[in-house]
Length: 299
Figure: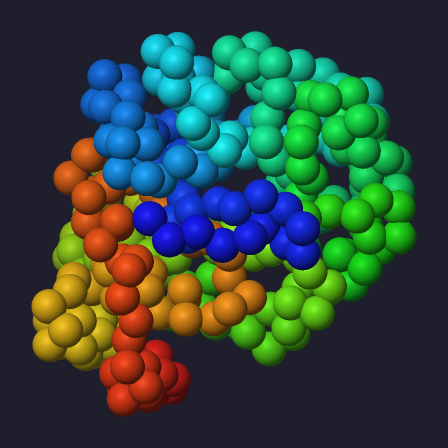
C-alpha cells in the first residue's frame, strides 16, 4: 500500500482509507459479522486508516468490536464530533467515542462540519485541549471551505481537511486544494464514488431500500441517472482499456493530485475492499486522464 504524509509534518498514512458510514447502516443495513469481516479485510490489505464519526450511527461500536483482537495498534483511527461543537459537548463526545471504539485515544479527531452557531475559537481550543490531554494525536476539520479554515487556523493549527471529492464534483480543485497544499493541510477525500454512482451499478429504474439514504437523494432519481449515464459508460470504457474497473479508475484519478493525501472509500464486503486496493500502485497516463477530464467536463 502506498503512503503519503498527512499535512506538513504528520504521520505516513495509506493513500486509501476505510470510510465507515456504510457499515453503520446509512446505506442499508449491514450484518455486524459481515461489517467486522470487512474491517479485518481492509486492515489485512493495508487499508489501515479507518474514519468514522459520532453521527455514523453504530459504526464506532462496530469498529471497536472489530479491533478487540489486538488490531488497534496497527490502525490509524479517525473520528469526528458531529452536531454540537461547544466545548462541553466536545468533551462528552470524545469520551463517548473512545468508549465505543474501546480505546483511550484516537489518532485524528475532527470537527464534522462548519456551524456558525458555535464560535470556532471555542471549538478549536476544545480540540487542542484533547490533543494536549492525549485523547487525540492529531486534529482536523471536515467539510470546511477556505474562509472557515482560515478562521479555525487563527486559534489552533490542524493537520487535515475532509471534503467531498469525486469525478462528478471537482469543485474543490479551484480553491480548496491549492489552499490546503499551500498551508500544509492534508486532504482526506470522502465520497470518492459519489455514493455509488461511480460504481456503474445504478441505472434509471433502480430503487433503493427505504433504509438506504440514496432512496431520497436527487442524484439517484431517474432523470439524474440518465444524465450521468454517458459519463459513467465512457469512464468504464477507459478503465477497461487499462484492465481496471470503473471504481479503481475513479479512486486513482483523485490520487493524481499531490494535494490529496488519502481517499476514503466505504465498503460493505471484503470483496469490495480487494477492489479498492487495486486503485493504487499505478497511474493513469496523460492521455487517459485527458480523456477522463473531457468526459467529466461534459455539460
